[in-house]
Length: 278
Length: 327
Image 1: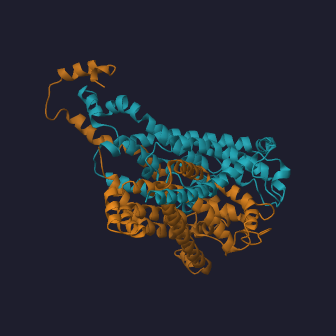
Image 2: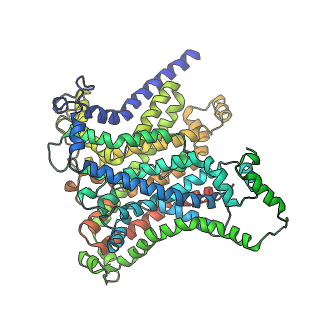
Image 3: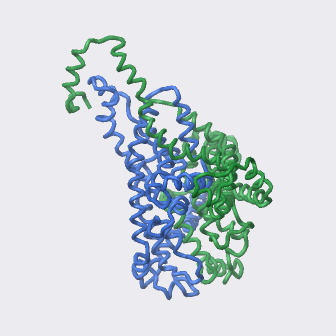
């Protein structure tokens, strides 16, 4: 029995490694191509690993028009959206995790229902309404739009973190005679800090990755976000600057990948539903 | 942590001791306690109502109006009754797009769920080193921003020097040199599917794998001792336990894939989008936004929201049950 077990384990391992190569390949290929000199990129036979890596594509990418505008706009949109959303979502999460109240169920349906709305279906009403209040082609319009998507999942994930806090800690604060809300602020806030950080990072990723609303709501190239900048890279021309495109792609993906690796373990996966896939 | 360690805690304690203990303290305090949850959720509810509720109300109104660029500038449309809806429902393109999107969704969800489940099962069979490798690859795929993934796909599949054609030719799958993967509608949507499945399986694998660890070992062993084959064990022991997870994953995937926009739009490229390869999200974008016929676009949006609402009932009901617990 034993040798057979060992052999099947070997077969499964081989299959696993083959799949590892297939799944990781696109990410490897993006990064590897970003460092390859042009003659290796444009040759008929691809080089799997460049012996003469170059940084010139990265230089080209960041010197392309509107790269820094895109990065700056993305950072503004992301940081304002995340900061505002976290404060509001944290308050609502407390209500959801620690209180029973009439209308609670309706509130839950609201925040889950919103995550189900297909974003494409909301382009037109948001565009028309934001145009009326002169919020088209303004970062503020994009920020409020993103908040409606970041808020529901942040409430949901933070609620999960709050539920995980032992009740006696909370009661210890209540015995002190401080109000229920005061006890949250002094005792629970430090305890949920890791949860807040993790949720913020997920909100960061969703907002940084967003494409369709930025594309529709921001017209000027100088106002656009980094993902929209990248989407215009290929344009319609046949002879694309592949090295530059992959360098730009790498620059935009790397912060997300790093953040993702940090929080990946922290958040219960069931809770991230709707948060991670665009 | 004891109460004395909390800064200022003793002062609060002294104050509390001086206060006479009564069953019902202050009516004002009770009122505040009752209002607390509402005050806490108010900012979120108001934000959502203003930025989403109002536009949705507006969407319903728009769908009954003639509303183009002129009306956008003038700030009001002219009522046309059900004309937008009848125009959409009589447009055979709409029905083709709907059918295509449904087929696309079924194919995507079936592939992603099937491959994802097989990968999760594989994770339980491999050595821990390979498991770490595979998990790392999945996390990388998961973390890739969709817009970036599209660019990588375009680079890998380009006819001149894409790595895909090179590998397929080398492996003697056929002569794929100069093969244009974006040459036909079917091929365009297939490449889109490969990209979306690649992006979707990490979430499915991780969730199913977590679910598999919930399957009691004794049950599987008992079934094996009874002589059940691996497939029977999977079908009769594992699947029933994982059923709720499958249900949630499938409905989420259906909702996401039905409304997809970014990947097909960017991969196929706006210049190559036409009525033979449009999916619902893109059709809506083209008809409503690009043609600036917002009234008709609103009618399509409402129809799309209704279809997704029907598709998502199962998921929402399940999640509401989960959310209905407090500590």
